[in-house]
Figure 1 (cartoon, rainbow, N blue to C red):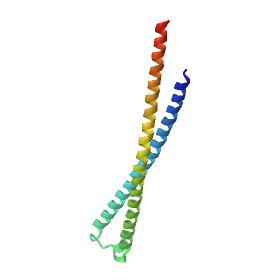
Figure 2 (figure 1 turned 60 degrees about the vertical axis):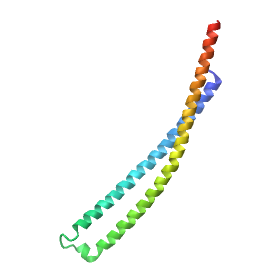
Figure 3 (figure 1 turned 120 degrees about the horizontal axis):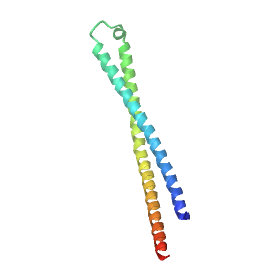
Figure 4 (figure 1 turned 120 degrees about the vertical axis):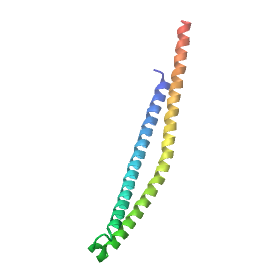
Length: 131
């Protein structure tokens, strides 16, 4: 095997590994985003359910002021989750750029390897025709 092809294959293997690593990091961010969005939806649902229940029947929690504290906690939690979500989305934008670069490098090395293999095949074909 040609030394140059072996070197390009090694490089292509490295770029492929880097691409897979970037994809794994991005997948982790997407999972965390889904989790945060689910938590936000749960908070919204619980808040809406509690608001619908208020006034239907005598409620000791409402009368004791616990609802006000709970609603304050829900709002603070929602704010914290939204802040975390915003940071996560910003991290995803940064990660997308790293993923694009890794993909581009991987594609470039694949193309380079294909080009080199074609060139070697043409050289072999020419040599075979001379013999």
